[in-house]
Structure formats: structure tokens, C-alpha cells
Image (tube, rainbow, N blue to C red; front, side, top):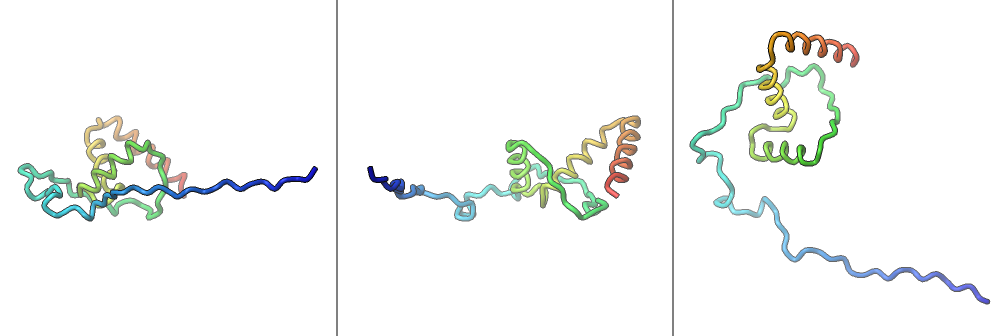
Length: 116
């Protein structure tokens, strides 16, 4: 009895979409304009360079949360996700009471000593 060679699977053509979409191909008149907004959003002046280190770290986010952050950056509410998160944190920290603020300062000191 002779051994038979194994057959390789036959490959079929890859399917590509007939129509593609690119944000850059949309005409300027179709893009939403932030200049025509009657009530423009004013962002607080924040020093984004106040962060001690320039190293970046990764954070695990749900895809939905990441998409929401990217959408706000695309709408030009901030230049990067990092700046957007800083704005959100500043707004949240302003609402903390004195006890929570002192507790947060203590935790931040502890985290900073761990990194050194």
C-alpha cells in the first residue's frame, strides 16, 4: 500500500468591499463645523506639562470607553486622550471635599515614592 501525499487546501480569492469610506474624502461642506456652534464649549486653561514624568504607561480600557475618548479627541475638544483625561480629572477633583482632597494628596505622594 503506497502512502498518498497530503493535499494542500485550495485557496480562494480574498473578498474586498466594493465601496470604501475615508473621513478625508468627505467634502468640507459635509463635515460638521465647530465654528457655527452657537454655544461653543470653553475648556479651562490647564497646564498639561505639570506631570512629573514624561514616560507613558498603558491603561486597560473597555473598547467602548476608548472609542468615546477617541471621538472627543476627534471632535477637537483636546489634542490628545491624555489632555482630555486631565481635563476630566481636574473637573472631578474640584468637586471633592476637603477630607477626600487630603486623602488623595496622601495617596499621590505614596504612588510617587513607589515610582522612584
